[in-house]
Length: 361
Ligand code: CA
Image (cartoon, rainbow, N blue to C red; front, side, top):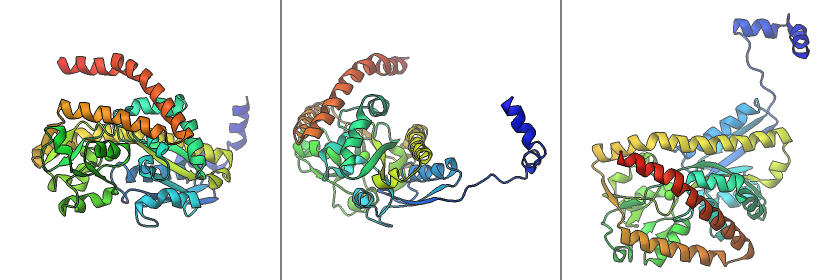
């Protein structure tokens, strides 16, 4: 009844006539909020930078233009690793990056990006959305005046680019490798020298020999940076980043100044990007891997079992030590570990067994 009355009410209006004739412009509200989003990625970088762009356009579209977000690449407003502080201080209202870059601010942050031998994308989304992860993440980032949200995932990454072959644990000794977060700490325990570098600096650092090896993401992204030109061997699996979460961070005061519907739009736009980025990697990685191998002659290498075993036990050691840093980190670690223990069993029954069965056919 209500609908019929409504239609009757506007029956003769230009709106309906316009729609049938296809002449009416979509209604766009006046822009009430103009925000800036700073990122740790080079502007428009495939998957990561474009994910940040997608987040901004979704917010604009879903709010009918009431909220517009302008995206800045690394170093355009602040350096890549200055994003957390800048959003925390309100230099920009929001940022896009990955929590492992903030271990200097908080060791606990790393659990919200990637943990060596930890959860896959599917599992970590389960933990964050339905296993208590987001509540802990919000508590942690609340200390910096920030609201966090997962906003992208790479899936299982690759182990990285090397110019020498890794045959034993000994080969990791003295190896200077770009590898951030907890993975970097594990490499250090194995005798390597981890280096933190933003993605945009990787190519030059490898080319100039400032580092011996580097991990970035996977075939889609590594091809885009041309890393095959400066390293010979491409190692797998990405033991250090099995399902890296990208994050959106929002200045808490700016977030709280939004009406509830725009807050919901912002958070749901993050959810869309969180899922869509993973879909994009899933779609682009296979072809990129073919290009790397067939066109550029990249040599694929699998880390030997001995190396993986050693890194895995060091990873347990590192995460347990990090957990003792402070009370909140300890709670984050406990929650992560508990969820992983359960999801490991289920994933072994479901995904792992299925993937093995499919590979055998
Ligand atoms: Ca990585």
